[in-house]
Image (tube, rainbow, N blue to C red; front, side, top):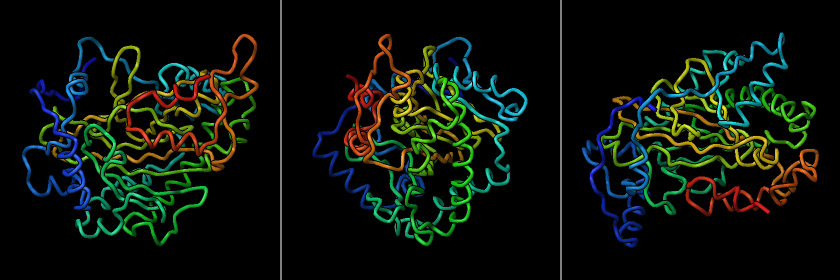
Length: 369
């Protein structure tokens, strides 16, 4: 595959002793200023805690040959040919696990304004951002750099604003004013689009359009606004490590910069920015509920080599009831295709996700039977 950026081969790297790394990680976290502050300080080389191991770096570089593209699905065709759209979504969800949707009904002005508002939050003075820098989500608002900073082998080159949007949303006054109006409006639109997509995905499984929505899969929502500053050594780190999302469905709005990639049978494929499109990906929970008819996909973001920051906003759609049991739907299991996973509560599922670093498929494997 080709790559949107040319990156030289990485030099050999060395790993700091664990105690030195923990000290450096704590010092970085205690600044409460994120990667943005490192760039603002004028650094030309990245701190060692951000340097990834050779096995990660060697996989960043492109192969040769034509690059496949993930499917783009036009939702304006729903009225005239719903069955065809269901087939397109089923094919995308059961193969690559990623697709883009266009003509989804969200006003272009909102797409632009919510990206601009999230960028504005991250570009406030460090002391303003630091007011909401915290690793717990007690108030439903958390500005951090790297959710897995203390458990990962290496930190990634990004900062994040996390907002709890459901089932009990963060108090509006806790959401930073610079982006408050836009993120509330954006959440409302994502619920609308998400419910349409869950209906289509449900039909793709041969079920009623309401079946997946009956599980409350869009009631528990977390929004993350990622900010990827320019990286002076993009060959030594990543913006977001390879992982699969744990929830049901993820709706992503990305700007024009690029860098998001999904792992396919053809290797890593760029999810090219498409003006006005939303990126949709299947999460581990929907893979399990569908008894593996649908597939979650590993994805990552390259470190940003551009002279302007990359901004993306993801909303993770999850069940609202964390004590309810989930597993493969009985309608999708049979003697010929028994349930591939055991039942579990969302609490158990998410606890397992957050006790490991972001490292791919081990979550679904943990719940296999």
